Length: 296
Ligand code: BJW
Image (cartoon, rainbow, N blue to C red; front, side):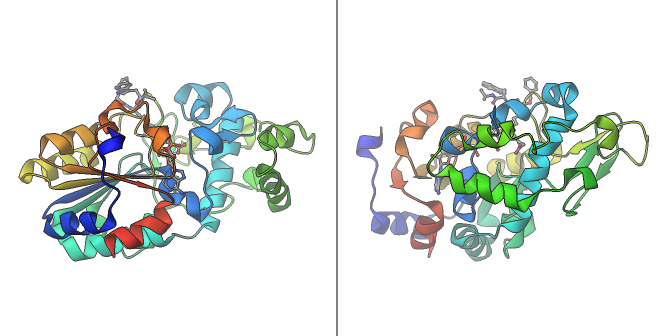
């Protein structure tokens, strides 16, 4: 349990130095210092919705305009954000360890891709905000960085700034913005981006929603990497490890012999993830500050 986990950076350096095969499992906390919201806990509300309640095909079917407003906002914020020292420290480790390092990220914000992280060692298991696909046919578009993605999804920066300014003092800031009559509450489907191939289907973000399967080729690459040999260390960075199959990689790494090092702002947010109760290292704090110290 956490009580016996080491918090010593020196001890960790020794383990890191002698580790031949290392895997990282990253989550939204890695990008928190870049100003992007997490999914659960304090950052998990968008307007008066729980972020995870909008990340489903059912939500899109019911109100595609609402779901697109959420993703239009997320794309805009991610494009304005910059990778932080945590992203860069992981990129350095990837270059140094080569095939002995793999970074599995649940993040869809594209920030790791904006570091020198070798692309073959970065596994995007929830895909990215910047792929689009058709909700009806097999059309897929990669690397669409247009902001807005469609004129109807133009973000009013002033209202976003006002919302963020209120965030520190008012936990219901998003709800207040939502009730502001100037803020659109949804968009007519006719005004949303449509598929250029089948022409009738709506485009949707290419991310993996609840109940959907993860990219099979990526899962296969991950499995192949694990199957090659034993694993010495897994870094569990800024994730509540609540979502599967992602969280399952901690168990898989352990079965391959890995020690577990958790980097999280809040050690208690891992309470529900029983697979993290026994960790070898626990570093509590901001991943953007801790990773350069740990990996440098
Ligand atoms: C900091 C910090 C700082 C803050 N520094 N730290 C087995 C058991 C039970 C359920 C299932 C199961 N297998 C499958 C399921 C169902 C489901 C699931 O897991 N449900 C659980 C919730 C119980 N899984 C799925 O549906 C998956 N698909 C699937 O399994 O397909 C096969 C299948 C199909 C049909 C039926 C059955 C099986 C798909 C999951 C897709 C998840 N998608 C999302 C949305 C992506 C799009 C988008 O971005 O909008 O992915 S949900 C959301 O959660 C997002 C994230 O990648 C993911 C993980 O969240 P993350 O990154 O951990 O964020 P938080 O907010 O939870 O945590 C942040 C952490 O950082 C906190 O701990 C903070 O303390 C910390 N932190 N600031 C360091 N500065």
